[in-house]
Length: 212
Image (cartoon, rainbow, N blue to C red; front, side):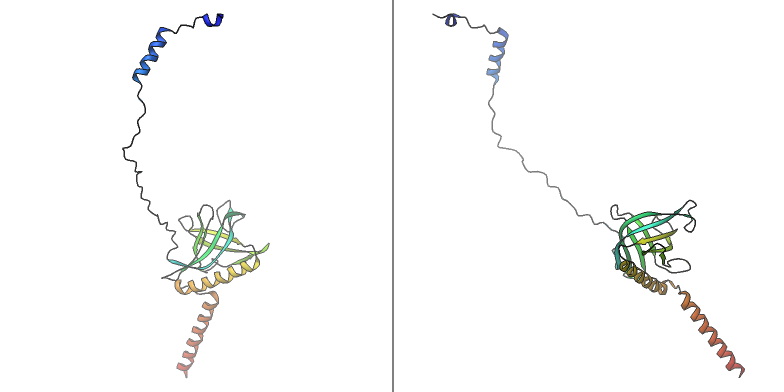
């Protein structure tokens, strides 16, 4: 007989043997659960309509462009300073469906923040387009702007990719100014002088007839 056959097996600790027996006595096989409420809760999603303030307006003109703002140390739009980029996005001329008033609007395309918002009313120095000295693709104008919630004297420069696009903007901007002039009761400088001249001529003719 070999030594391996007669070699005694190691004795199991009494505590371990007892614990194993208790686990076997308390063992319950897993049971399949066939009952329960397995319906996931129904969540109703409502579409939220975002109002931009442009719902009552028609697009009179639109083109993607870059807006610059003149920034001076004194805050005066006419004082010495430098041009700083205000935002890139669709520059628009929007015409109100009821009143017919046309405003200029530009939203920064990434944040949708309004960076320019004003009516196109050519009066005095305001809303008179002047070409930029360094480029035919840029138009400059001064205006009382309302983009920041209060009227503020600003000088803007709008830059386009092509000269033709800049010329089209000038054409539509001046058309908008002419249409707004009738609504706001603002006369163009040339028209105002002509009307005054005609009125003076009529008064002189009337005076001559009375003298005769």
